[in-house]
Length: 251
Ligand SMILES: [Zn+2]
Image (cartoon, rainbow, N blue to C red):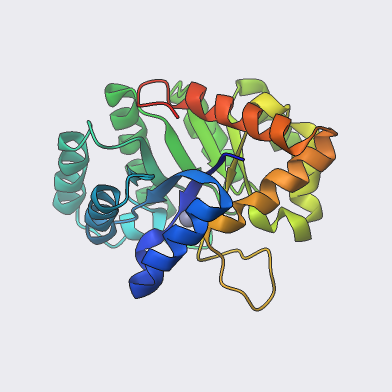
C-alpha cells in the first residue's frame, strides 16, 4: 500500500524523528511533505528533506508568524524561498487565521505568498482557521489554480464553493473522530482529495502523538465513505498527488 502525508511538521519530533520515519516507511508512506512556518522552520524543513529521501519541503510564512516579522524580514524570507525554488514542492504553510491578531498584515503577507507561488508555478498548502471565506476569496482573486486546503473546517457551503473552484482538500487522520471531515469527504469527489496528518498535532488516537504512519486512518475512512477498496483508494490518491505535483518527481 502506498500512502502520502501531504502535511506534517516533522521538525517538532526532535530526536524521535528517525523512529517516526521508519514507522512511516513500514506503514507504506512514500512521501511526507513537511511544512515550515517561519525562517527557522523553513531551514529545518530543507535540512530534513536532505536527510530523508521520502521527505519533501514546503516553505512559507504562517499567519501568526507573518505578524511577528518586520517587513524587511518578510521580504528577505520570500527571497530565500524563491532561491530554494528547485527543492521546494509547495508554498506552505500559509493562509489566514482569525484566532490570531493583525488580520490586515496576515492578508498582505498571504497575498504576497500567493504571488510568489504563481511566479514559481508551485502549489499552495493553505491554513484557514475561522477565516475560510476570506481565504477562498483571496485564492480566487489571485487566480490560484493548485490549491490544497489543509484541514478545512469551513461550512458546507464553502466546501462546495472551493470544490467547484477545483481546489484539493487534504483530509486529516483525525477524520475517524470528526463528523465534519466525514461530511467533507462525502461532498468532495475523490479526484480532489489528498491525505495528511498535520502531525504531531491532530492525532486520530487518544493518548498517542500523531505521526505520518497514521495517515492510513484517513485513507481507510475515505475508502469506506467512497465505497471503494483500500488499494483502489490508495491508487486514486497517488494519482491526485502526482497531478498536483506535476512539476516534481513523481512516485
Ligand atoms: Zn500545519
